[in-house]
Image (cartoon, rainbow, N blue to C red; front, side, top):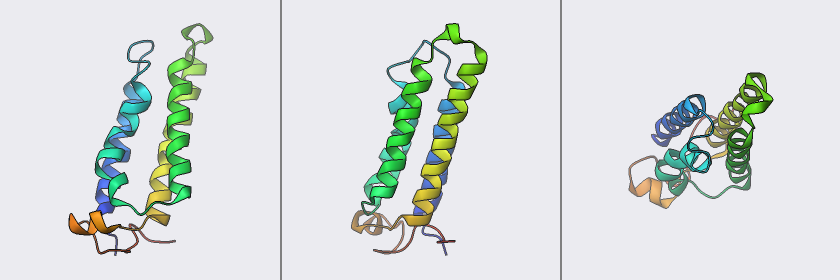
Length: 124
């Protein structure tokens, strides 16, 4: 059975994908990377046991968001769509990593998001 934290992971991922799809250059260029991971950091990250695989995927999301934000409009819609798709893929991989490798930490257990050490999602 999934920990209650899994619902927060899915909601944070959906929020991140909405930010990625709604982004229109050049407005909010500097804020995009942080807005994409804001919900994840606020609702999920502090309730997970640290795992380098999850942190690596979070970093991939930030890097993909920067690439989207820095894709010049002159490169055309196809380049922007490709960068956006890369960001959405990175968000999906972060979600999968948390659901597969994440463990509820003491803070998450105190918040009622699962028991300490419980896997966030199924390991399959």
